[in-house]
Image (cartoon, rainbow, N blue to C red):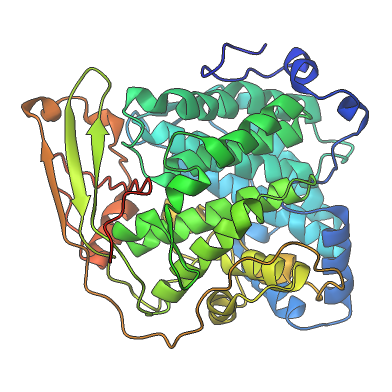
Length: 475
């Protein structure tokens, strides 16, 4: 059903029919059509068979990963907990999902049926057993991250004879999607600026992936509309609130730390790619605003100097504890830190569209060949992206680059890294309660913050927000 405006969109054929424009219902969605299309999969297989560079190196990275082996055996759980609960077992879920995805991708490239069978066995086991996600506020991260990833793995084997497509669709509809859609609506009963862009972006990715995988157009439209106009920090104009004269789009989470800024760029790229494969251009939305934000993060992560303005934002629970927090500068960076996010973005803008993206291109070259889950450490931060972009997204330059060109980012020489962010926070006495609103329960969050030299105060959780609504001071 379709709920009242502002409450969210339910899953079902009624929702699809109600929200689909006249004539659009006859146009089927593309399958496979999440991160990879049939043309993408055929390109990978042909290039690897020919030993073409850099595809061969990307495929070697995949085959070397322990998750990509046909001997992988799933360990499905009825209830998955993240952040709190007993046992806190979400690591089992993300390891199994990445094993399913990697085996499915390996099958499409090599043609070895054993890998398809392994992926199907993993996905069928989880769709048969998993009933709910629990925990702290982290349950929303689990729903978003593992929901979009499960859908992508399942999309690659949806036509396999032994795959239970109907049951996997029900898992997306009944377990992953409801939490993600609810987060976009209510934000865990927090004020809308309480959560960083990543929280919204995980939810957008899951909602979009659910709509595509389950053939629900209203759900796709829900995700697209939130990306463009949502009130939370993950919508594109809130995640990238300022475009500077040099063409760089200030990424709001650069005031937090590098790891989470990279996560945000990877998630927004994932959303854009999935939408693109259904004929929806979010990459180019608002004069390619995402390109400008990704360029900013790439330059900064490579050690370059980027502009930043101090900002303050509200946090807290609706009708409960409240406070504010200020970031005074861009966070420090470790130029050696990388995530498998750049190949997809660089290839879209420079190869599909023929646009300049010098910093993104450098970041992609530095991280090549990109790996996937299991190649970037054992903690959940290393499994937030499905990865293997060198193999999956490298493409020949398109002859048609008809999209409107954005303002190119500056090619000015990168300078040394900026000082660490100075963060201060204030909170009401009631802030001691309701910590579940923003407590992540994730050990890698602490590690990222420590690496960036950022100290979280007033409750122990760093939640910065830049809301620039055109009131920036001159100069």
